[in-house]
Amino acid sequence: MIVAMQDEAKEELIQQVIEKMVEIGFDVHRTTGATSTILAGVGKPGHFDVAEFQVLEGVHQAYRISSPYKLAGRGFRPEGTTITFPNGVVVGGENVTIMAGPCSVESPEQILLSAQQVKAAGGQFLRGGAFKPRSSPYSFQGMGLEGLKLLREVADETGLLVITEVMEISQIELMLPYIDCFQVGARNMQNFNLLRELGYVRKPVLLKRGIAATIEEVLLSAEYILSGGNYDLMLCERGIRTFETYTRNTMDISAIPVLKKLTHLPVLGDPSHGVGKREFVAPMALASVAAGADGLLMEMHPNPDKALSDGAQSLFPEQLEKLVAQLRQIAPIVGRSVA
Ligand code: PEP
Ligand code: MN
Picture 1 (tube, rainbow, N blue to C red):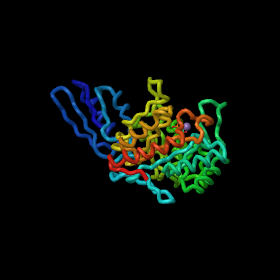
Picture 2: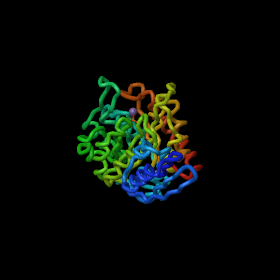
Picture 3: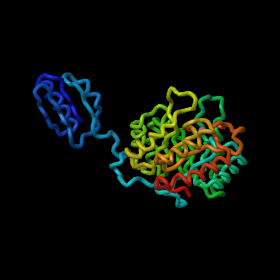
Picture 4: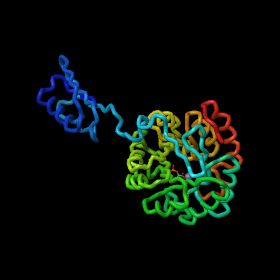
């Protein structure tokens, strides 16, 4: 941390700031200029809030230099994290992982057909919500436990892995036997109690960016899960809310290379929620991979016009197949491949 004192700040005030820095665990290096004094705090301080220094009497400005997240930072594992699933699928390696399926599990027929179509297109994961966070309480809320059982059944039948959303702590135990990866949705990115509990399970987690979350907030949420000892964590850019209304959200492609720089965790893109309109999903998927994404989470429905949720952004099965074929061509340009 750097603290720049106001010009002509009294020695007494400077000493107060130094004391507070030392209390936190900083080694303080002082530079006294003709008019102003700069205090540089180095070493390994405990947790601190830079805002507390910014408001101290005599302080002109205080800046944090080190990142507030330790386990999520790239420096913790410079080589990058890879997550290996029970069937050998690796996320975060050379292969770009394809996760696809409907927004929600709706019926045995719908989810079986979806699994077959995802497999045929070249996917590794079947997605589908059994517990759905809907903006309206009157919208379809998901099939619950029945949906989890169906996901497991059809995924085993087709040789896919299951990723599905967990909305609350009480669902964790219930879900464990049926799933391969927990998905934390945008609305729950800062549900810190849920994140903490997911840190204690030994099953991978995909954490989606909140609709108004900064990159630092995403990484601090990741830190909650990592600090519980669960290192099998991946992040997902799924669009943020901006002034633009033409698309459902604004897919922040730039978040992908930025996150890849700041963290060792695999980073995926969800172009479906990113744009909300089917016709723009493929270009955003291609852009995500070109930007360095380790995988994609996409909505596809056997009959999107009849979908109970997110039909407008769900790809037709043929579109997913065509898109994966295009991804296979884009990926090698950035040193990746699509199985
Ligand atoms: C979903 O994946 O269907 C979903 C609800 O996503 P998000 O949490 O990103 O809105
Ligand atoms: Mn959805």
